[in-house]
Length: 116
Ligand code: HEC
Image 1 (cartoon, helix red, strand yellow):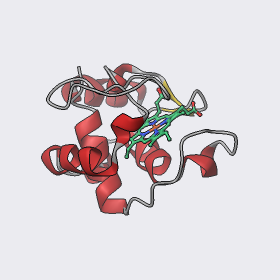
Image 2 (tube, rainbow, N blue to C red):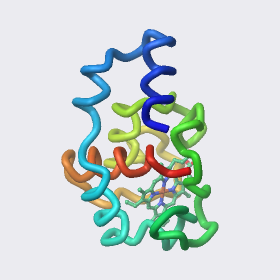
Image 3 (cartoon, helix red, strand yellow):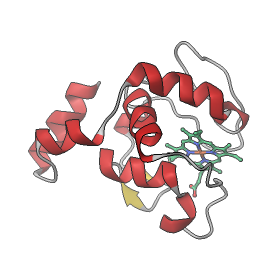
Image 4 (cartoon, rainbow, N blue to C red):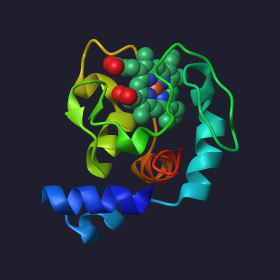
């Protein structure tokens, strides 16, 4: 999945491999953070957590989604921005600012990109 993303990014020429790896954290820590922050209160999440609600969009195959919140291209950098402060990207978004640190958002982004 991640390799597919890297391939898409390098084909699209909108991100170098270095930028991608710098933009992502540790998926295992990200999974723990997703559980801790209660993302499943609003999102269906597959895989190990495999639960959730339908308040927000399901996060299955999120690596293959073209846009985040329907407004910004889905790149690792934009994913981190989105996770840290959705309203800064779309003031009308219903997703709240959960107060994630940059490091937590990078870990969560790495985890989200593993979802099938
Ligand atoms: C109170 C409900 C709520 C919580 C809690 C929440 N989200 Fe969201 N999230 C939303 C909504 C609603 C959207 C759709 C926003 C939009 O399109 O403007 C969204 C959008 C997203 C998107 C973009 C999805 C897409 O297809 O565009 C991602 C990724 C995401 N959330 C991840 C998370 C993660 C990770 C957490 C936990 C750290 C989280 N969300 C917590 C409600 C929530």
